[in-house]
Image (tube, rainbow, N blue to C red; front, top):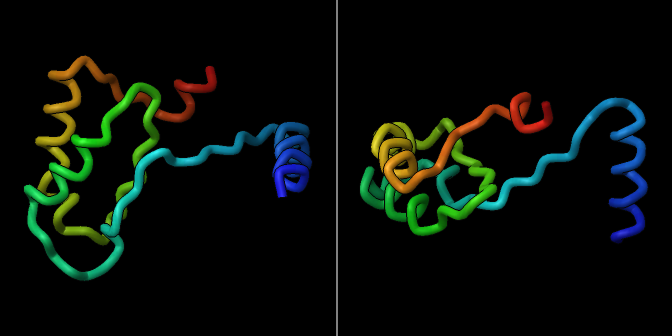
Length: 88
């Protein structure tokens, strides 16, 4: 399996692409609503340097908590960057 992934990575690089993998995801893709605090707690408990968050737009919980998540992360010294900024 790792040989296949390594080989694909070389193909991507030759074509000018990058492979990006998220380092955080949770069960936010269902229609079950747990509430804003649930989303806030899930995301903020996992924060670590270099984290790539995967948050699904379908989640009302994420939408409701996102502003507070960003404020919390900034207060902890984290920065948000686009992938373009990351690779430049």
